Length: 463
Image (cartoon, rainbow, N blue to C red):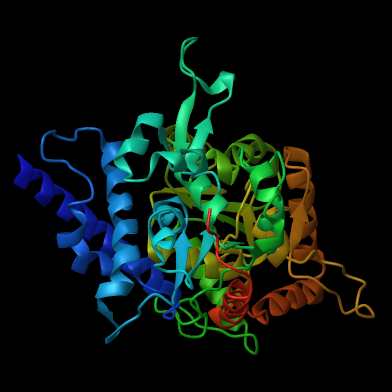
């Protein structure tokens, strides 16, 4: 049994490490310490941390928690013992902690290393990509984390009465992300707008007061995009290429997309797209509510996504009902996402909250005008169109709408549609301003380097 458990854990951990490696490499932040790969060399060390020999684990959530607990222990041990990049980092290093999955790292530094003089000069930065995911588990999970009992308060979490399962449920739990918010030396979110939103009751998911208390070390940095993969001048997934200096290929991409999906090939008809998960956060319920009224206009609409089964069924039904105007592609396909981004005139993103958002960045790079809910990273990256600014030459790269309602969204879409139809020069200005924006990782990396300098100015968290 002991051997089986260790083999199972090794498989799970290697899988997690490789996925983590892929995600970091795709963002081209090579200077961040790759704690995922560090795990591979540390497996022989970390299995002694949690005694699993006498019981079989069947709870998948517990397995996930154990997987990332081991990851965090490995991350703390690796700089001390492994030649990473050809040499051993030693104690004077920086841990970049991504979301709840790695959130035990700053807790471990404070609870198990610094009390013994280890990592006294190291620092940790917590990066929050989506506060809705916090790594909340039953209070009994704490005993599996290998932490001293006096540190329970750092992770302690109590569900409000309405969220408890029954009258006798005390709501006691542990919140791993909370532990990092308490103990990390600095906190970064993936946009400036989101760094403010998470300190509010509406956007804080129960952690707003704690995050407000750490405002002095809280910053927001907008993610970059891979401008090699997402380049309309060389994109291997689109049938025609174009650039800010020659937009003719975009009209050809639109015609090719209409033909591929069986829609009428009409360059004068506004083509609106949505790409994303089909869930409550992304506002797909608002699209369902607004679509009958929207399709009364002479437009075409394409949706690509997967998720909520009811929404997937609705997409199939809507395609049957509006055969001449609507297409719903259930699932996710990389090549079609590129072709929709290139071929559409307008990209709709009615997200309830959006920590950063990438699709609006891709859209602007491809000359597709975004219409977005005014929230988080969408608000930071999409500048509202003002036709009379800059001595009549116009300003802005799209439309934002607020509040999040059907009427507000339809109002913004109506303005976009009318501008597309009636004001071609203004529309071209919108396209070119979006295409000229700098959404590379170079800008984001420079901001991260500034945070790296700041984090070593103040003393580390010591508990």
